[in-house]
Image (cartoon, rainbow, N blue to C red):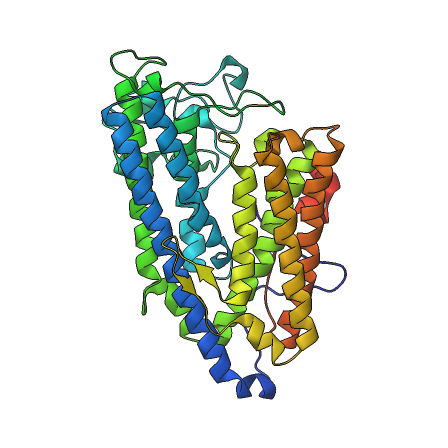
Length: 428
């Protein structure tokens, strides 16, 4: 779902690598860049550790629910899922500029997904897809699944089966078998309300062997348990890679100049192509609730807000951990202010403006109108709130590009989106 920006208000000069040119002025600031890069990596470690810790809390809530299925237990697991999303979304700014994170990210946050691969779906979902032979494979109901013409043994549902055989099966991106959104679907079920009120409403009895609804309650529980364990393992793996000397941390700290470039690549790409374009403008153009990220739980407003906060934290060098510990240190903001105070103030203000726009969306959602309802055609106020956030994200990306220039960096490629760059192609 990524595309590369070729223009942004006529000001984005982009190339195809992260090669960095170093001016004499930039060389003089090498020590500052080193401090910024090292602190950025330290915050990255803290965020991924928090994501892993909250995933373990989610795993515990799921385990308690499966041991004694009840409405209260399902509600507790759903709340744990929402809490687990918060620190993870704050890490997304670490993508795009760091290939270690990018190569891994699809295992935990890939979407949208063809949920018929995993479990039963409503008749309105359809019965076939030209793009996906596993569109309604329903692994939970099938002990054997045919993938690329070969029978795959699915009699025992394990993390290894999910990760090694089912995720992206057949080379189809929509075959999302692992991560937050697979778990989300298993906890909430399909949201069949379109742009009307209401989220997914899977009954807890889908997991109750004594009063089983949906069939295959034991296998559904096994899938949920395995997917949860896999999420914990995947997040801990990435947390370990952010430890000093770890593979992901070294991308940032081995060459601080390139580390700063990676930071800005992540900021610009998440701000423009990913969040403004693919996650927000696309859904607005199509008025399609299937294009909202947390579509089963109606939690999209919180995911967008935490992405925006993560962008702000990447610039300010601040982060409050889930245990309340506050982190602060050498920041990109300070690096920019030393060269251009006005530009630092400009970007700082724009980042806050975007956060405020996302908070307005969240406030409306918490007041009873979910994000998918705001997307609806004819919802003038809801559409306007989303468009305001999109405009703010685009505007702050222009300032991020100016920061790239002021710091003497070149060769930085930012992610683009047809939804912003070529909206006519989206309608086709």
